[in-house]
Amino acid sequence: MKIGTIDLGKRPVMLAPMEDVTDIAFRLMCKRFGADMVYTEFVSSDALIRHVNKTKAKLSVSDEERPVAIQIYGKDVETMVEAARICETAKPDLIDLNFGCPVKKVANKGAGAGILRNIPLMLDITREVVKAVNIPVTVKTRLGWDDNNKIIPQLAEQLQDCGIVALSIHGRTRAQMYTGQADWTLIGEVKNNARIKIPIIGNGDITSAQQCLHHFEEYGVDGIMIGRGSIGRPWIFREVKHLLTSGDLLPNESFEWYLNILKQQVFESVERLDEHRGILHIRRHLAATPLFKGISDFKPTRVAMLRAGTVEELFAIMDGISC
Image (tube, rainbow, N blue to C red; front, side, top):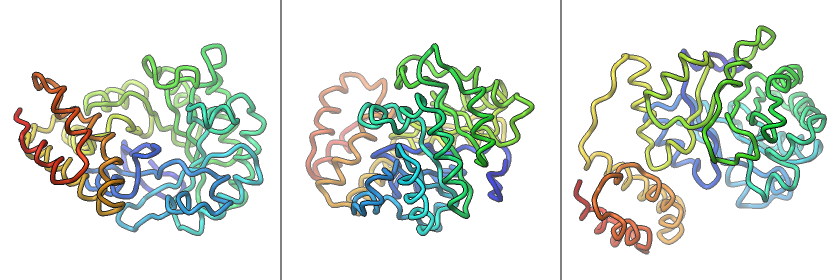
């Protein structure tokens, strides 16, 4: 599969963009475990053109994580064009336009998935950003606003006509948020549309290597994005790539092996931020990891782990966990 001139090989698996998750440390870790492409956290075009330092920091990319995309969101043409030009100076491999974020503070302002209610504006933004930059532009969106407006089959053709080089589709509507099950049938319909010439990347509810293989085979997508299934589990990319290349499931490692990866995430988070902010940042991964699933009477330990205020305290709790 190629995105512009970027050759990602057969059946690439990518780390989906996620706010407060896909910082550079996590992207590099997922890359080491086999992610074929990674995406930054969402970057607000409004904040970027106002030179908000916290937002500008999200543009930091490294050669070790390439190919890497910077994803931006916004609600008007001029701001998105200016933000895209700023992003281009950070030298990502491509720019991705977020037309899929469902959270209220974004969608209710007409950005992210909110723009699914204003398709002419979405197309204007896409067309003008493509013209404004000299690197590939892609789009990530959803099936539509709600069950009565699943417009992705027509929308995919319109976005392609704007000049994007790939389209990622999350198999939910904005109304669904992250509830229910992702519906991949329309993603498959888009992929099998003879008029679609660009790569179609599927996203939604991929939490195992077996699911990833099944969705490649069932829906024929060119690539697959893994989002929430990687939180607290960056090794999922290793498992997926092994199954896709060998046809066999990767044997499980020891409990300590996985625990050490989580510890490494803690170290890297603290090193990037500081002890207090680093631990706060990594709690999402510790809360979401499937590593502790099935351990009896684990709730008090989980609570203590998520309340720990220092690395020493946190690691003492983690070292006391037995599977």
